[in-house]
Amino acid sequence: MSHHPYELITFRWKHIEIELTYHPCWGVIPDGVMSHLDIKSIDPPRAPLPITETGYLSHFFHYTKGDTRETILKATKDWLDKEAQNEIWKKHEIESNQLSLF
Image 1 (cartoon, one colour):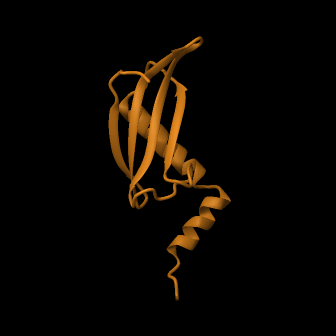
Image 2 (image 1 turned 120 degrees about the horizontal axis):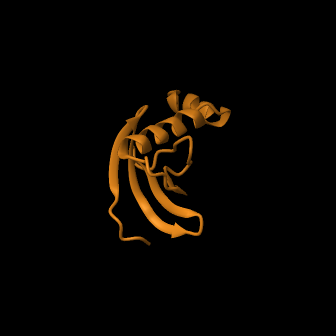
């Protein structure tokens, strides 16, 4: 793993607090530089997200020179919003919002 500095970004998406650990230049590959993003729900801990049922996701992608803290945060929020439109996530939200009678 790379020893390059990383950014720690915490934000709230809907009712879930999420922590991003962003490594802009994680490693070099033949066609460029790879970035790495750890996405973890921290409050509630390990709460499911539309992009991961476990509340944790390790994601690699090609580094773009214009990537900043703000662009990574916006891209992550957009990704969550897009995936939250699928029927599986919508069902999860309905079920988690219903009160249990037992």
